[in-house]
Length: 457
Length: 134
Image 1 (tube, helix red, strand yellow):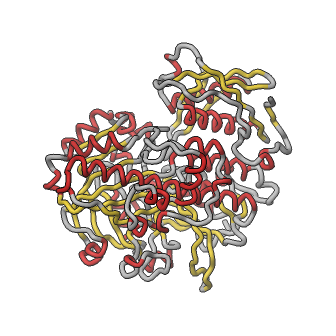
Image 2 (spheres, chains in turn orange, green):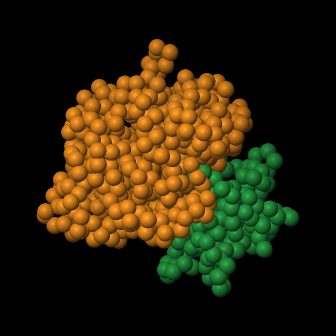
Image 3 (cartoon, rainbow over the protein chains, first blue to last red):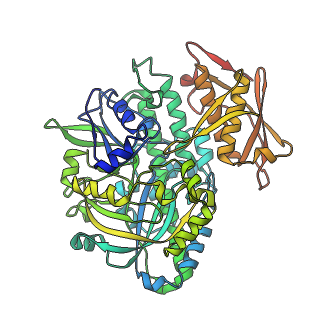
């Protein structure tokens, strides 16, 4: 180990984390060249590909490596929270229509295609432009980008670093959700913990919200596949000896490291464009079902939770430029950080933590403590505690849909099997996970959301 | 019957495959992956409608198997189909596949760069296991 491995957990979560390879993987991460201060694990941790999910690792920009496994296959998988001007009672009668409309409008499922098919030039523009491409083509408003992490566009994306396979997999997938744990969820603000920050974020009691969870689809997956292969082939040349081949990496400043970073950035921009197109689809359905009375839908925030970013952090009293890998971890920058949008300078950035289907989601705010303890990072969700196989053995999709319906949660899905795999009991208790984050002051609780309708792939 | 077992994994899926030789191993891995992508599809298929040539090269058998599955997965998504069979025709590998529901509009074609990366990086090195070439 080059640095310590640190875990944020309570005793109950720690007991769950011990059941899989999360800790072994965290120790492996701590051996990577150029890692600084500590390898970190958030309370929603579970075993992943090479790196654990819920992992944060910051590498020295000049001496450290970049690893696709530290970002994940779904590059810039993330969460966007939309807020409406309506309260839950006002959509009670139209909720089934809204859910069915969203299911129809937002294509879902493994490999699903959307309504947009991009030619080579347009796809390159998406990879470079992210949300800017989408808004310039009428998918959203000019102010939308001002409410998104990094304005929904990272500089340095290079479409030439993205393979033909990756482009072919992505060219018809904008505006699609995918499968697995991805969803669009209509909810309401059930509880407010910090009225002042909630007001600044534009949240009020009983307000109808819409949460979108998805990423860069097949394009990001292929980029990870391509560059893991490339990096495995260069390990010996760079003298990198790994405890696990899934940690494949390359020096950040090497040609392979730079090329992967440029491709990853392109995928991140693609994912932001994807969530922007889905936002437009949500707005269309909202207008179709509710008409003018539905009012406008605006973006509260959009966070990436599978990404590597170049950031400045204080390490040993010195400000250093680091390549911060967040894999199943959300940025949680505190107040007055220069990278934050002006509207979040006073509050810290919104931190969006979706829970499992039947439970709750949280809106939190980033803190100064997170800057000191976790490279400005927090958890990203409830975190699985059970394999999909085991979840399938314990409940049928049909029974789960009925159970959720009885609890007042309307479900639309293209796969009842997939629904069972995502059963709430397959995840850790979101209240425990967020409780650890709040107690450690990695983020401050602002509001709790309750699901009303879930649309799943 | 192909020998594969889908094993539990907290986040993803884990596949254990076995075979008496490399061909059997690759066939079992393909069958297992297809069962994950679309359960039961290949068991009820009728006849293959297309073949897709694939050329792969790798530094060792593990990378060759991972590369093979990655290539098939990418082609499955690109062409919206499941490849149910693999035939090993030296010096070619040929895949055959069935359509899914929608009509096929994309013609099979040779991939100029099957690894999806610069040939500079894909060039085999020590301990080469290479199965290609057109």
